[in-house]
Length: 81
Image (cartoon, rainbow, N blue to C red; front, top):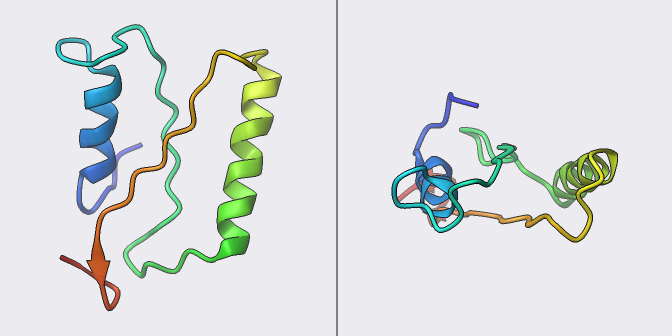
């Protein structure tokens, strides 16, 4: 995915599925970014992204064998802390 501005999601994904220390080394990570530098995500954008994730799971016949993990970094007044 790249282009992250804090690296938080990448760090969390490596803890989940990293090839050396990940808890599920054979997992496939499909990164999705909702927040951007402006922290402009809305409820509508969240539901749209969540729907696309579920569609992808169904399309790949991975129901019952998938995890959706949302990683958030604390921020204040629209500025990462």
